[in-house]
Length: 340
Ligand SMILES: Nc1ncnc2c1ncn2[C@@H]1O[C@H](COP(=O)(O)OP(=O)(O)O)[C@@H](O)[C@H]1O
Ligand SMILES: [Mg+2]
Image (cartoon, protein in one colour):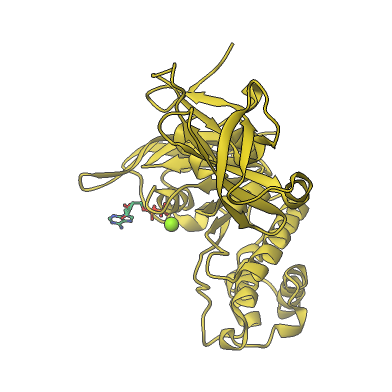
């Protein structure tokens, strides 16, 4: 696959504040990439620079192999959806969507036909004549998506498009955005601070922190093999602890990778279950240990059925095993130590 978007050594400063610090990023044609990171790390700024809505301090952006750094937004061929619905309140859904086709020499019939196709794609064929105030938040974002797509852009840019919606609607729209993105083969960048969203939607996640890219990889790669402590901590739940004999290392293990037994074993670490939180399909145990320094407490996620089988719970003593193949080790600079 060809490179659709290339960001080369991009720097953005506001006064003395470096908001993007030498970013390199390549996105393949048809790829769905999520920029994931905490609030303020520079995600929206990076998206705005790619869109041409803002100017970089240094570096360049290539679109389809051509330097697009100097191009105005209108020449960059992207559709964009923001968190807030940003629809024109005084226009109907149909007028909002058809607005993008206004300056293209098309007959009314052609415009109606194209708009109808996108309304169908986002599942709103029956609500084209409503005003934004007559639509739910989720429906407004569908209209915004149709508006972004109606000009058949090459790139789709999404800045936290689902953040303002309630959980059920959000999950439904996630699937639909993915379906439409694959159907159209659109190269897509979505900004989010929500790890679940990134894990479920992205072909590739770019983890950002403090103006830098921390790691780029498939959701599974990052989950199983985080490059830094930050990446490990930001995506999924993880326990950090230190072992008594390894002062220069921080160890980490995901709660679902710790196994629990009621019987003594040589490698089992004795622990006391101090709390058991019901989480639906699993239970999160807090376990207090004595033979691991600094930390003392480990989270263990256990399927509900397993918990019933073991007949265990809060206040009980158990033995925890931390399988070596699931332990991730970081050096004192928080970078993963690769075992040979
Ligand atoms: N127009 C601006 N002027 C000055 N600082 C800005 C401007 N836009 C963004 N910033 C700063 O840049 C940093 C990154 O912002 P942003 O890209 O919006 O972060 P994110 O989308 O990851 O939450 C923040 O510290 C923010 O305050
Ligand atoms: Mg943002």
